[in-house]
Image (cartoon, rainbow, N blue to C red; front, side):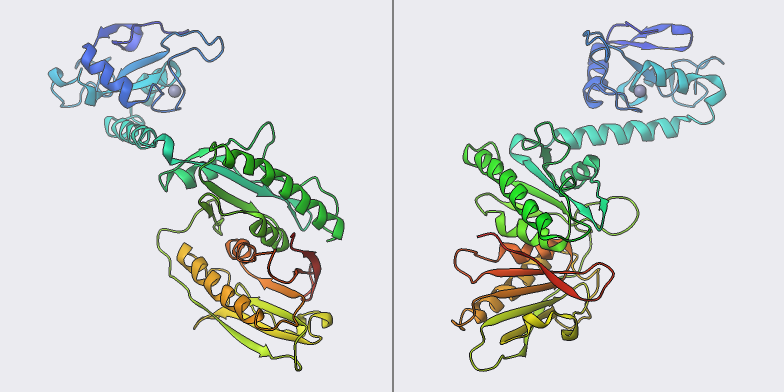
Amino acid sequence: MTNKAPLNSAIGPNNTTRSIRDRVSRRVWVAAGGRCTFCNRWLLDDEITGQPVFIGQLAHIVGWDTTEGSPRGSDPMSVDCRNEADNLMLICYDQHRVIDSKSLWDVYTADRLREFKRQHEHRIKMLTALAHQDSTTVLRLVDTIHGSPVQLAQSAVNEALVSVGQYPSYALLGTDEYEIDLRKLPGEKEGTSLHWIAAVECIRDRLGRLGALVADRTVVSIAVFPLARIPILIALGAMLDDTVPTVVYPKRRGGKETWGWPDVGTDQDFEWNVLDSGSGAPTQATVLFSISGSIGRERIPAETNVGARVYEISPADATPNFDLVDTATSVDLFSRCWRAVIADIETFPGVDAVNVIAAVPTTIAVAIGRSVNASVHPPVRIYDRVDHEASYSFALELPR
Ligand SMILES: [Zn+2]
């Protein structure tokens, strides 16, 4: 049964109606954003037919009179106040039947309903406070990781952005599930060069489309949510351009999928050291990024040791671990340290390759790529950890 009661009626048990003053009903409808306080259903049109009928109902929290059949009607609230906005919620017919059914009065107490109303109206107010200029374009990158295709919930992305005062735009999405989806590319589990090459081309293609949207001002800022192996993340960073503000979001560790920095974090600085100055004039540079874990020199491929100047970047005054980087400032401090290493490498003109061996969190991986100016620096070769082994092997060279 669909209720076609006018906007300014409240419905009671047995479908009796009571008219509510226009001023009051308008306030409740607007505060609720035209959506059900319980299920968030849109109440201005019928969902199936699209007909513009009001399928919402104004429901009393404390029933409108004190007789026995009035839900929560025995509450001490004075009868004069019961038709005011504070005591009325906008809900759909289905939920209205639930909260008013006598067997559930103990469950849907007046206090509980007030809390539902408060939370719903607060959420509507917060979301509608976002203005057009607060929109940011979402760029999700997903791949298979060691054979398992990753998933990335749109709701978790939306939550992360709304919590920092931005609303998500999916302008880049088209009909695909994700903005950059590498999961169908072959060879990830085996780590074949084909996978890395195809991934880089796929990212380049999608970022080309993004570039066009930036150029015509459809996109004014970008929010990146990446879930992929380290070499792919570094390559993504190298291909992102800095024309518009671009923020990379971390996925938090733990059960429920949550993105973004924790409310409280500690800024972590980094330091670099030269482990091996190379023999005479070095012909290559090898950089170990010991951040989420330590990379011992014995674990790096022999070819990256030959004639190499070997650096290590590690946390200052801290042991490498997975939870070390939990603020955006820490990523900036890392980038500054990495650029200092690049500047040092540039003082050795004989160096014609830079090898990157990284045990890092995702945001740092993207930051490694972003600091590399491929048109100036020697080729940057990314190594990846071999599945289930402690050693590293060559994966890809950063695109130029
Ligand atoms: Zn509902």
